Length: 238
Ligand SMILES: [Fe+2]
Ligand SMILES: [Fe+2]
Image (tube, rainbow, N blue to C red; front, side, top):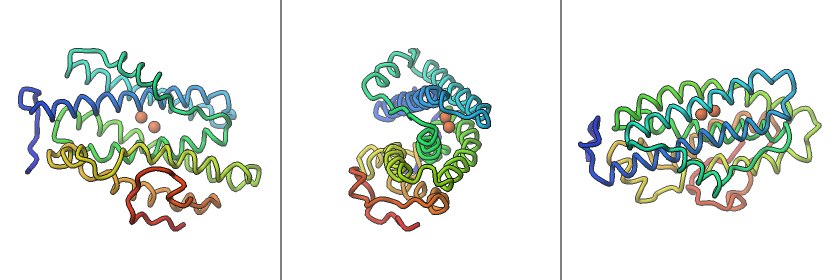
């Protein structure tokens, strides 16, 4: 089906409307979860990176607010109770050290970035506007997070810790994309809600982090060790 722009909910099928509502709920959850995780992690941040992390937390909170506003306009309801319930049922793991926070910054945050990029041309026009703004800001979080991880991994101090932490957060980052090849993926693509299947986004994400993985002296684990559905043709070389 050729995707056409949708401006008003009156022009949506119930399935399309339902998907938009779910997307906003998930996005609001993700943004607030990020703010909580980085906020919790502030205790581990050395002075040198304090301003950066505070700025990052603030931006995640603002992303949450932007999605919450859009949700309110669209549904007439608050997203907060939905997000609270989801955060209660499915809390994001919190980073428990500076090294782990850097991994989370590198992998969880960047997974979110690549996931959102699939929606920047979303056929629902109001969603597209908000997503484009968030994507632009997320792009700004990336270089520093990567630099911190590479710097710490190369210091030699974290040689025992770095690979397990990498694998833990790689999995969490990859989970941002949702399962590949589901009927929901198909529906979203057919209706121009997102560009491509989750599996394709996973491949972009892996390609994007590959240089830093190499520089940090890390390696991708056996795909089966990640215990999740993955496309069979991901290039896991470093
Ligand atoms: Fe964000
Ligand atoms: Fe971010």
